[in-house]
Length: 85
Image (tube, rainbow, N blue to C red; front, side, top):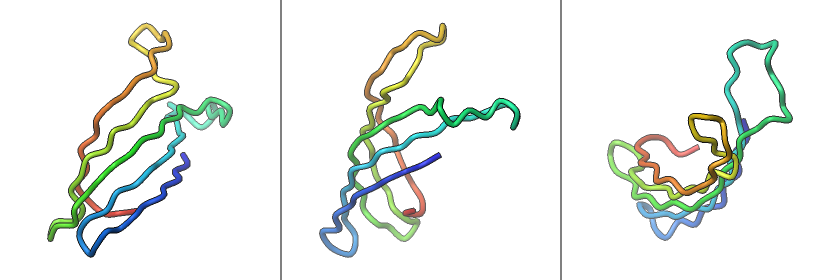
């Protein structure tokens, strides 16, 4: 998996970011294929709380598929709570 992120911190507790991710999961090491990565990109915003960053990301999955394995790219909202990478 790979991740690239460009963020802007407005003050000590508010930031926004742009990101690009690529990765996949494999049932066994023999199935590993670095040429088959699922890609996504998006924007996010967060505030830093005593529990860590709390935020929302809006990401677009370029290689999403439906349950039948057919291409179905689209947007998805992600809630995040935890450490900043």
